[in-house]
Length: 181
Image (cartoon, rainbow, N blue to C red; front, side, top):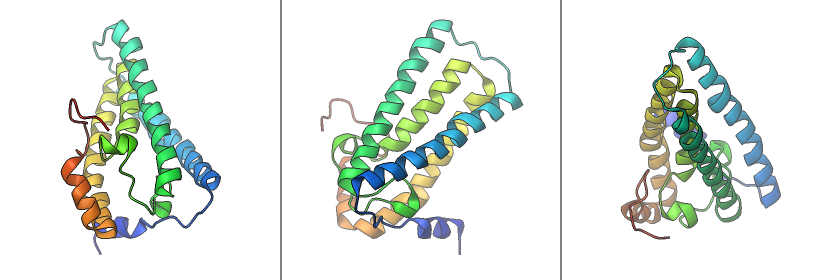
């Protein structure tokens, strides 16, 4: 069995009925995810490569702040969509049982990942750290590979033609300019 097959087998639709319970699971997942991927690993990356990058102070504050706040806002809106409309969580073992294609999911197929990566890139800009920048780059590449080789094949299998049609009209990562939900 390949790693991809093993990862795809971990993805199971949620059986949780309560929206409050789905939110609680999502928030627990968030605490763990943020502690590992947005605090511990960036800190370790900075400690390993603390070289400072030439990022102007105004960008370090304003751009990083705007990117981080936007990322968190996107992420929270998506948790709500997963809990209410998808009837699941971002956790692979408690994935949405319904395909969510409205709201931010009508603009990009992976808004949760876009929001999370925005926060990590914001950290990279704010700390102007070579280690954090390389971490953000590596995490972005890993996220892309996981989406393409694990998540999308599993969603095609689970949701069939509905997911294929959705993929034809909604881009994987960045929204198309001028397109409205």
